[in-house]
Image 1 (cartoon, rainbow, N blue to C red):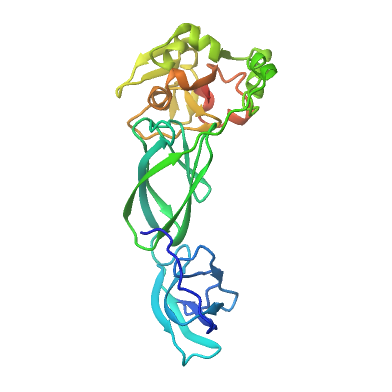
Image 2 (cartoon, rainbow, N blue to C red; image 1 turned 90 degrees about the vertical axis):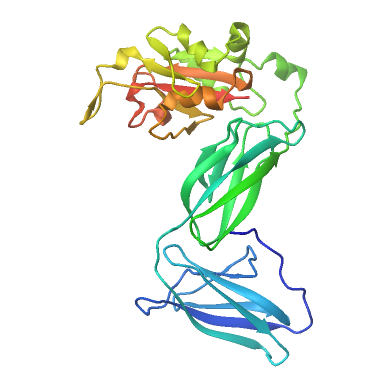
Length: 336
């Protein structure tokens, strides 16, 4: 597993590479196979006949990678010489159906200005959410990646998004990254500062204040949090009637809505446990060792929170957060 590298220096000689890709098991042509030359992020795709072509090859040595989900990648080396005139024929190459290529990706996310960890950074792989960062960094666990080129994205409010390219051709490989994010310049006019209790410069909290006017849940603004000076952000939730905050197993607190204990969550489970957690609109997945709400104190510090919404009962939960599993209540956290 390596990052994309540069290509061969251009020379006057120019040739076109042509070839065919087929399924090694069935013998049928494979369409939609990504064809990479020297790990260049721009790939050609095979057509319905399994054929591809790559133009503009100069004299030199090349590495060709053929990649398609559900098949083991094929990597070959070849050379273009003066004896090749207009065309370089690779011939037919097979791809063998195989298990998914997987990787475990972890690392740190630091502020480029202060060098301090940046928490609640959303990490996505090929557009799919994979993890949130904490003060200890992030880890995706083992997940499926594409044979060939993959795109990693790191996003957080207040920072420039960061994108990295991940080249994967071997299975069961771990990758450790050190990512730095650049803070966005904050340009705030005086009139906006006076109005920051109804919106922020990005408009992220507009819906929060709209829902607070409806009064269907419990709401805490940045000013409320600063006035209470909680040690853990879950301590703010102790003020809500019908909500119990208990000590968790891993340093955070577990938040439960005691009024939901009679609710049937599924045909197999009666009663409710921990409330569901969303940070900046993203549902926080958890493993069996954690209750969802226990992630709250591990991922978010009070000084990083702009607003909190708590819906202890199914009634009143915003429709976009009210799906299966939300019957036990929902906690929405919006970071600065």
